[in-house]
Length: 121
Image (cartoon, rainbow, N blue to C red):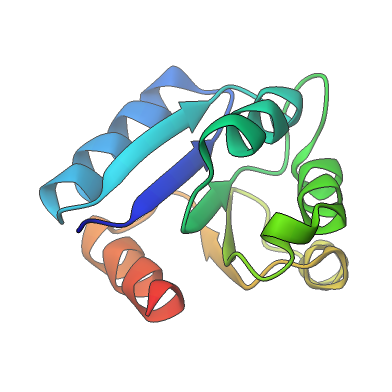
């Protein structure tokens, strides 16, 4: 059975690119447009792995990860941060919130799928 990946990103282009890369690798993909939508989607549908952006309207990636980690069902669900940000302070803030890994945009689809495979194992 295929694993489900939730992608949380306010950019339709980025969601489409993630969908393509992940579906080609055999994953089921569900999508959310920001942190609020992400938490609602995760609560309704669940996911084996989450990929989230940091800079989004309504609720950013940090708030989303913290909200997700507050839910006992998703305390251990792997979260990969996919963002244009690369500064160390933001990385450590994401790690403190509960992020599993960090991928800088633009992403290489092969490396992204490898990262998902590693954390989803």
